[in-house]
Length: 77
Image 1 (cartoon, one colour):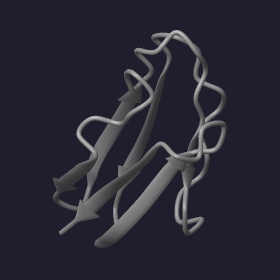
Image 2: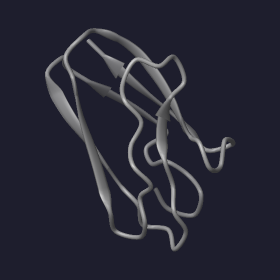
Image 3: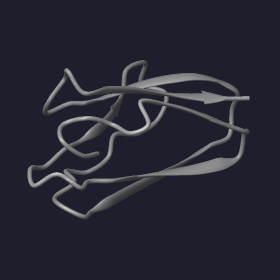
Image 4: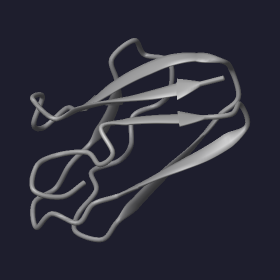
């Protein structure tokens, strides 16, 4: 997360991959699943991390619950 955006905005990974988000902004963010398919992160202050292992195939849309215009997608094959 940097400049109020997720980068990359879409990420393709094989099942079993752990994805880590790192907050590089100077404001807090919270990672939240749009479909409720994974638990939300705690509030992530600058340089804090959140990791989730994607075990099931599918498309996982997510957003920042503090800044809902920040969106992203994980595609698990």
